[in-house]
Image (tube, rainbow, N blue to C red; front, side):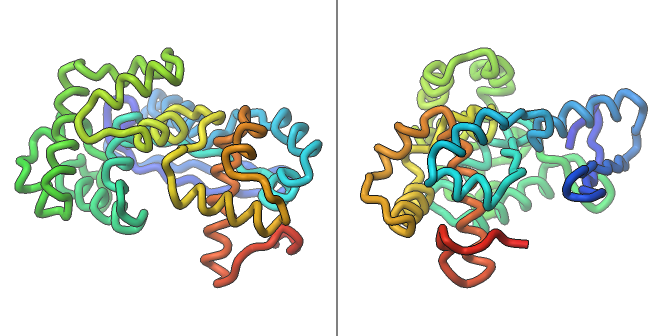
Length: 269
């Protein structure tokens, strides 16, 4: 990733006991000055949710048996964010109507084609980097013509300041959505994705995410609840985004074990 004006490789490993974990961070690249270490610390704190205090969430979850099941099974989960809103936006575009695996494959190709190299890896491209690619190059990476146009349009808007992504942190949710859905190729799902994954708005559950809604519906059914997804999300409004991440882990665990995870099953080791 880009840190202190230069691309650096960042390796993060959790070490220590589960009761007192620490993160070991190793930086590699041409410029690894003290200022880069400082930048890495602040970026990783945001990217990995290190400094987030979830005690209020756990207190609310303890009063709701349905939330208690999720919170305890995946206790310690910190919601991740992308390093930049631009990277989050392009992830949203790449994964529109595609599997995550397919979208990430195309993004890896984009990074290799336009991102600055760091050893054998590449930093995610900046808006200016992306603008150095013609539409035909993006299509050769697997993007459809429409997605190629959307990506170049977003890069152009970000590079020229038409879309001031760096100001989004100061805007409320409605203002961010309004700014994004005004861009060609960006709908409400992508805007919600940016709110949650790019800006860390943990009250946001992407309403048009069919996979996530199906996961929530399955969890309600498995737990013997008859309420609908909308009613559940309204009740969990302050923590809807955290519920999204917990359900994502539940889905990934189910895929890994080849079975549906039921609320009554023991916590994973």
